[in-house]
Length: 245
Image 1 (cartoon, rainbow, N blue to C red):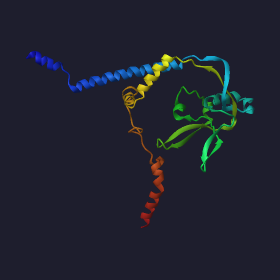
Image 2: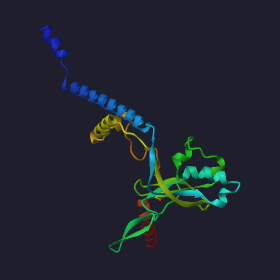
Image 3: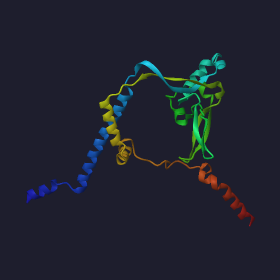
Image 4: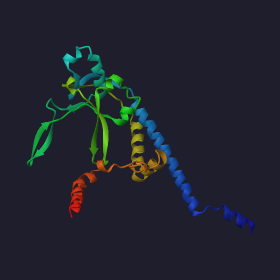
C-alpha cells in the first residue's frame, strides 16, 4: 500500500507535464535565438574582398557641399554636418525618375530627395555626436503620423541651400564572400523564429513583455487627436446652436 502511494506522488499531473513541456520549448527557442544573433554578427563581420576588376552598377545621387561654401572658412564645419544627414539614391540611369499613374496611363516624374531628418530619439542619444554649434542649425518640427495616430517630433536642417545634389557612377569595388554552411544554418533558424507563435514567445519572454502603444500614464491630448480634429468644428457649431435656443 505504501509503495502504491509513493508511486502516485511521483506521477506528475497533466498541468505539471504541460508546464515542463512549455519550459523546455522556451529553452530551445532561447538557444536558437541566441545562436541566430551570433550568426548574424559573424555574417556582418566577414571582411570584404576587393575585386580584381571593379564594375559600374548604375548611378548614385547624394548631397555635396556647394563649391562656394566649401572654400569658405566654414567649409569643414558644414562637411561634418552633411556626413550625418546625407542621403543616397540609386538608379540605373542618370534620370532618377519614378513611375506614376495619371489619368489611366503611366508617366515618369522626378524622384524627390531630401536631407535626412533627425528623430527625437537620435537627437537625445549621446552616441549621435552633434556639437552645440551644429545643433543651432536644426529646427524642431512635428508631423502627424496617421498610422500611429500621434505627432512625431523630428529635427530638420534649416539651411539646405548650402548643399547641392550630385550624380556619380556607382562602382562595385568589393564583395563579401559567403559561407554556404553558415548561410544554410542562419536561414533555417530565421525560418523557425519567424513563425507567428514563436515570434509571440520571443516578444513576451526574451525581448520583454508586450505593452500597449500608449502607456497608462501617457496623457492623450484631444486637440492633437485626429478624431477630435475631424469633429471639432461640428461640435462647436452644435454648442453655439444650443446657446442660441
